[in-house]
Length: 167
Image 1: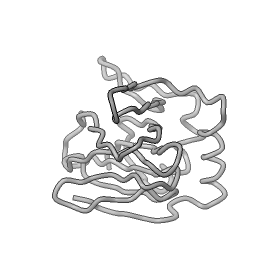
Image 2: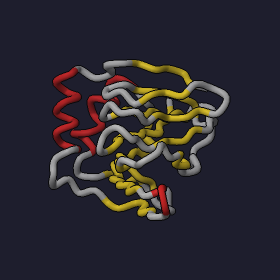
Image 3: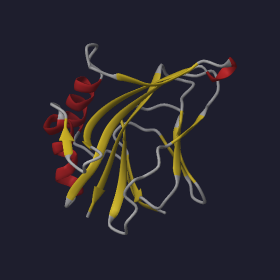
Image 4: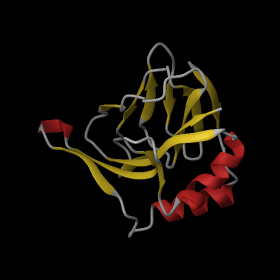
């Protein structure tokens, strides 16, 4: 179930500074998925911001405060379980991309997806609405709500920030 959808989530100045950081040509993206098969050619880039290793130790990136601080001020979580950026390349047709299994499935865990650019991709929620990608829009939902991302066909990429947190 979707708990909240909010347009213009961050102040425009803050959001555009955030975009400049992430879309800087020397940003250190990692290749997460590289699929080339007929019409399913796409590239998926990934950047971890907050992770928890197998020993349950929290690791943060150098950009944690720059990227997450303005968002966390508004979300007011008790803790951040994990957070990452994703960038999906343009495809000829919209492709559904399965999300990773959510490791935190308790009642107090939520996921927030902030869209970093406007495109014709969307987030699909099973038994609920599809949420279109509009820059600076956030969608917040329970971890128990299955979802998946899609690619885009009308811009060179689709980019999101995903935060899993506990309230």
